[in-house]
Length: 411
Image 1 (cartoon, rainbow, N blue to C red):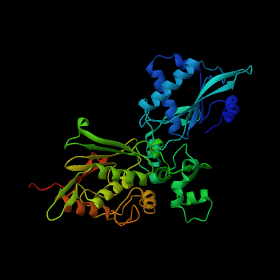
Image 2: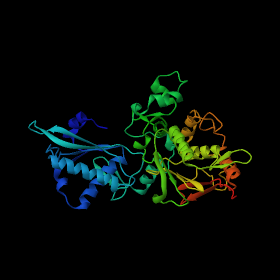
Image 3: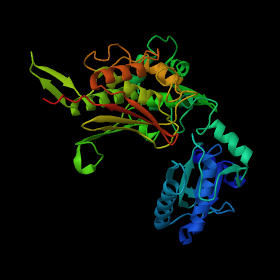
Image 4: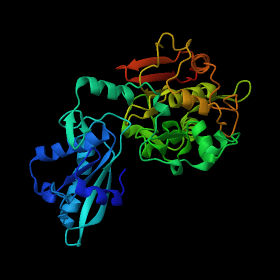
């Protein structure tokens, strides 16, 4: 990304593939089409190698500056456009600064900084990219190739991709240190070796797995990287009968711990006194743990903005995990096959010690990579409730696991 100094030096040379100038006249435009065209131009940078749009400099590279009202209006409209008119929504950075005009007077300008994105974005006019100083609609072959390189259909696994606008500073040492504790190299080299850090175009960026495992706020970088958990009274999803709700965030291992704690706190325990008092929970501890781990470890994080949803009812628990089944796994073979779309992520979780206070899962690490998770869910849940859990694939975009609760026999 160009610095202020770089932009000032390049101004006399004109626009190129990473730099675009706009005067302040856009602020006076009332027609929606003018603003949507601007969204096309900004999105073209994201679909290419990134770039900067400078408002307050006209096409002749003259610094005209912006009024306070123009600064605020343009910034507000662009943020709205990138969130509401671009699919998936586009994250940008804005910066208000001063550029000197021809007389040396400092004038206010607005910089809109756009990084190369993890996703391919569609703007109001279609799919665009940057070629030199121009915005061009992408031909089908280039669009297909870009989608293959990025999130929609990628050759490199999504969990190993770099996350734009990140650096080693976005990885918390207290979180990554246990994952690279045996490494003898420098910290940066150890992080690269573990693929928590990725070198791209001469810069170090955090990988998707690095952000998911070693950032305290991964959902700030990857929208949807959290768990929405809700406990309902009864058997229907109705906000009027909502007992408890929580947005579970943080690194993935902590999300797992928090989700398991949420289930424990909100499940009923049935007690019988014959011959001695014995309590039976709604859901088996091992099945509950494996279900949460599988949802977190195997979901498709490239699906922008989609989150894991965990809903508890009196008679069942539902866990919705974004993404279709990986590879050639089917609903019928899911209990017999071992496959994952997130190889790096599952490797990291297999080295991450369980943070729960007890040993109910029966092991020390979140994943053992032996393909036992689904069989445990099926066996333990059916043993407790008398009903087999059910997997359903919804619109080939979301996997639903339904685990039925233990029901106390009628007396």
